Length: 431
Image (cartoon, rainbow, N blue to C red):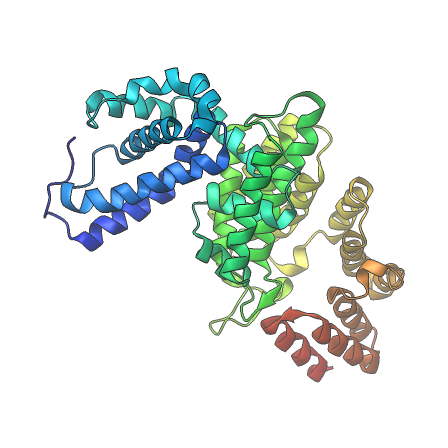
């Protein structure tokens, strides 16, 4: 094995290199191992064992030239050892033993590295796609799917996931452990679904990525308006998925939506972290590269289908804002029409609320308020803070300041995000 000579880099630098390699290679490593052992939980354990071995050996031996293949070689050998020790896996030994025999040399030599590199990258598209569909299997709860996906595909630690979602680390750890046990107990196959099963399963995958992005873009709880790291993780997962399924319109639609929404991140808060609403943002701070990437993804959607799905329709709405050089130039009538198309595809009072906002901006607050007031008896909207927030804005524009103030205060009482609560209370005071 060749690599960095011992002593050239400090132990701390080597550990930083290991962390970087793990972020880049862990998903591919787990995907390749899962194809061999047909067990996502076991694949992750083997990958973690290889990581521990790297942390023990690389500070003394140097970082290898092909660190990902080194990890794969080590993990494969651990798999062989475990299979030999565990008689309960005798059947698996017969199934995968021949595939692993090439890696039984006592030393990690060039031949073993080359074989592992083929395992790591040869069928990586198929393996990664299988891993995505397995981690997001509907047999798991939504929370479990999110945690497992961030762990296996995002390379996040349990602690990082817990901090991102503001839940105790043991809670996240339990979700991940139970998810892996459930996949094993239900004998969920490590495969890409086909036929009639593909559409609902793909929908589950996209839902997980979208949930991760939304939590980063507008945090539901805590002291911060946004959690940018979660947005970045979601966009990375979306881009991986787009690379693996380039001809799926809704995958492209979701990527477009996330890119365009994320383009506003720098303009969404002031220097103190206080929220800045869309129409008040400095559009010069919007990231034009992300906008161009999002619009390009939308163009690809139009090439693939004449009937855009929910994510593509939301991306088209975001594109209307992105193309407007000023808030006054926003095509609110087109946005209202797109929301009408969206609510036809996905009936939802939240989407109808957004349509009401667009109607109010396009045709006046009275027209918007008529739609919004039709949602007051919706059970799902009773504790949704944006309903009174929208009503407050429209009532204020109609000169009904007392009613507007009460609605701002009600919205503030319903939100769980401290930054948002402060913003809503400030609006109440202004009213």
